[in-house]
Length: 199
Image 1 (cartoon, one colour):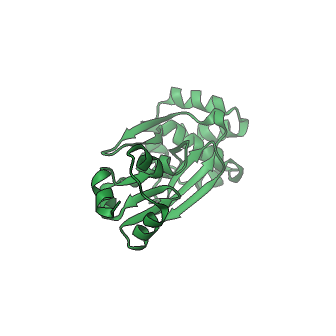
Image 2 (cartoon, rainbow, N blue to C red):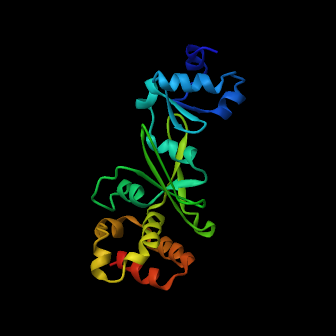
Image 3 (cartoon, rainbow, N blue to C red):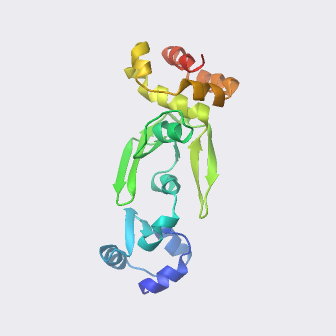
């Protein structure tokens, strides 16, 4: 198969080797490597590719759950999405039940932090033009962040260093849901720290 045939056969900005099999497209690894070398394709990770001429049509968040499953966007990326932190975020931060992983490629940096399976909840799908991605609910994004930063928070000053926008958090989150989710973590220190988000 020629590259132009692939370009016509795949309608999304990205595809996996599984997609090629489902569409009965006979493409060899050496062809994919050649097309990457010619800048027709961008290799996102092993088995996942992006059309170079379509990357501007893509929301980078959409690749997060394709790169490493199961996962959902949380931590700094979700906090910035909800305007809970002031800083710009230059990586897409996610949580996963798998081991910690970083994926850096030509389109971005994806950081995955491990959560225990029993804490993998509280996220919603966001539909995009070509698919979807998952993002933590506001309450869960804060709790994931505090949980994974907990060892660094031992006093009010260290909590303040998180630079959380408490007024925005307080006016946005569902306090009942926040408390229900917090109870699932069942960590005394975390309960004390999390309650600082509820003035």
